[in-house]
Image 1: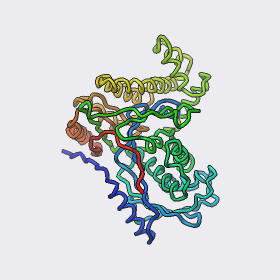
Image 2: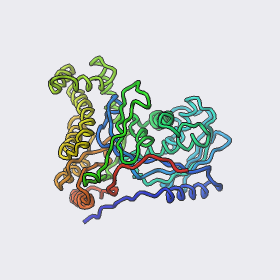
Image 3: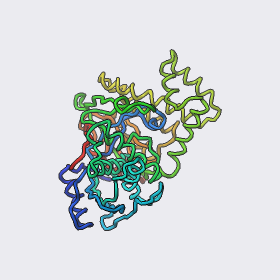
Image 4: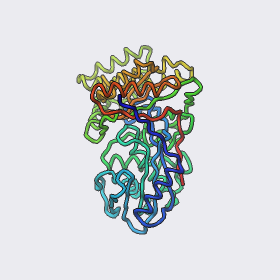
Length: 416
């Protein structure tokens, strides 16, 4: 029997010490400070952010810590506890989009994006990263890295954006551009907003409609699992998680093409019209009938129904109706599997086992093509359900999964 591994979060003191120790070892000096940003789990609202839709993430207690020191030139050196003997180097002077290879593109890309936005005082730096956000798990390890870097550069250059929610949007924009333009990994902004803006005990209702201000596009929704005797199981299937192989971009492009064919700016406009109609199902059917391509119809159906599920989940959870909340989790996963086609066998098996073992609902979370699932379960049930999933994985010859300890919603914060 394969024993499921539970990945504990590092405390801030431990994370800061590890990052600072690696910094001193590699660069022979002390850092200016240590900063951190969390990974995230999206409760519901998947592949909706780049369609102007709604998402509902919470921050993880698992964080990426960066010890960083500013330099007086344009050289950037970065090292990670994943490969502590290898220092990657780049030069910001004359750097173009896509000009950095490998994981270093993420932190270097943040500085590049800040300079592109007009913050010329942002120069070179040395950085060392220590993280307990599982890599390749769909829990936004990349956003934790870019956001922690953005917080660090904001502080060392006294830009003053991290002190307010509205100001953090500027840092979020740099983190998003680092991923999209420098690392070539498309992202719609859900991950970075969650990493920077989530608060303890709440889920972040993120409205991605274009044109909304920083004060208009988020609402903090109470998410107290303990109140209802519940916990959230997060399980990393360890199936390879790759979003830079064209699959993510292909779906994003098809959604944009569908919006153009339907004469709207984005599919959020379709979702709002469907929701406001007297007969939403008929309204959706009428929209889909205007699209001749079957694959495009499936993609649009997922996005429109998934946007609607976000507020439905918020309402069900607030009422304490966990049967309905769980059913919405299930409907989300089934739509991602059948209409958006972003699941893999490991995700589907993990979800099926969780449901069979008594979860109120279970779904994949993140971009898909690997990564993690979440399951809404009774308090104390996570370990048993995770082990059942591990047993089934072993029977099928899958890699052993790993789980994050059951928890409530954490807070986004930085460490200095």
